[in-house]
Length: 87
Image 1: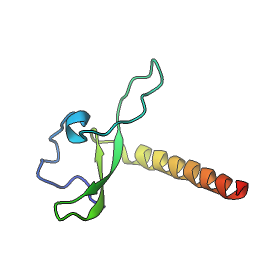
Image 2 (image 1 turned 180 degrees about the vertical axis):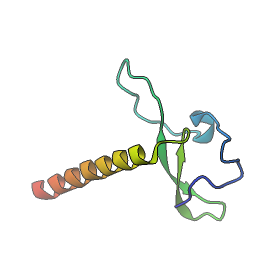
Image 3 (image 1 turned 180 degrees about the horizontal axis):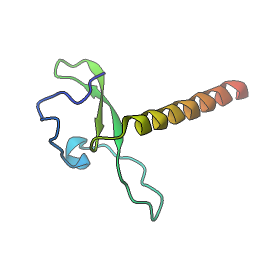
Image 4 (image 1 turned 45 degrees about the vertical axis):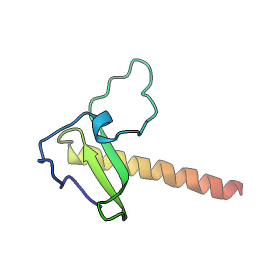
């Protein structure tokens, strides 16, 4: 999985709409204010191969990011298990 390497410098940032043109995400709840983001992107690389990359809005606290990813993995695992049980 590709991290932050690429043509842009590690501290260079661009608006999400410019970085991920044509992609959309669900909006936040009314009244919520975004603070940071971790974005996982399925891409076609310059050779036409499917690959994954991630981007962050700034230097996230690694422990907080790991915790959030673990929770999301657990939620997805439960949803998949529930789907299996319903089948």
